[in-house]
Image 1: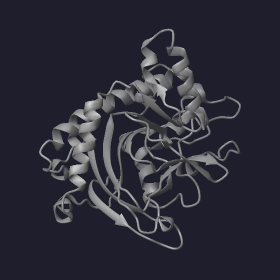
Image 2: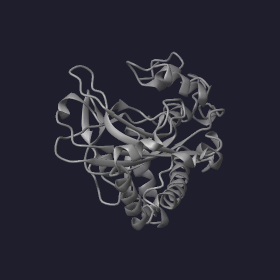
Image 3: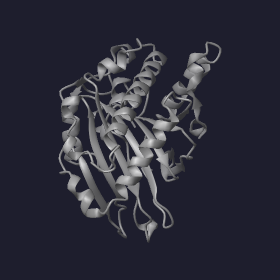
Length: 313
């Protein structure tokens, strides 16, 4: 899968290279909604610092981590752990810490660890840098579709952002579980930093391809709302995480998504007048409720919002 080779984002600042970089991003978005980027403008020191505070948190005793335990609701937040082995359908094998970072009114510091001491400051700086990066990427994606640079950002409404720290410990029987089962993200755009190999992306015909862990790279995948807004031009990326019996893998995932009361509709400029929109309009809260109700057991959730059309797969 050619799109797994990192795209050098610094080329956007060079008029001799910018068109090539934009074309690489467009190709990745059209083929599978998934690509990697390097030279993206986020300081390596900040990336390393976030990994450090993440490792320190997961190394805390279990009772100290449970102080920040969350509740399984639509807007889940806090610490959690699921380690399940099964001979039937793969389940979960991970610890995680999910924090809402934007808007500021949704930033609940009671879930933010007090150890290590530099945790809060590091997360605030990192997520601010990732929000800037998300906006830059969405601008390129919008322009590649012939839309104004701010189109997708505006279509998503008030900025919403969260970050999830994920830890996949060694598993005694990795063939009986997954770190995370196959899924596509439900929001807008996801930017992931990984430590160690284990992320896989769907490669067609029920096969999976491992995403190489390139130094100082980010993995970018489009989520379901982008698929709807682009009227199916760009697909959300199906992916999963596998585990192993020898080593711990960690990842740090930043999500950008619409507000619950935001109406999501296909961009009129991308709707064929003869065919019409491929997806119906919806409010993002409705999408969250459909996820909670388990409406997508045998297919991608976004398909359940498609207008009856043979072009949707």
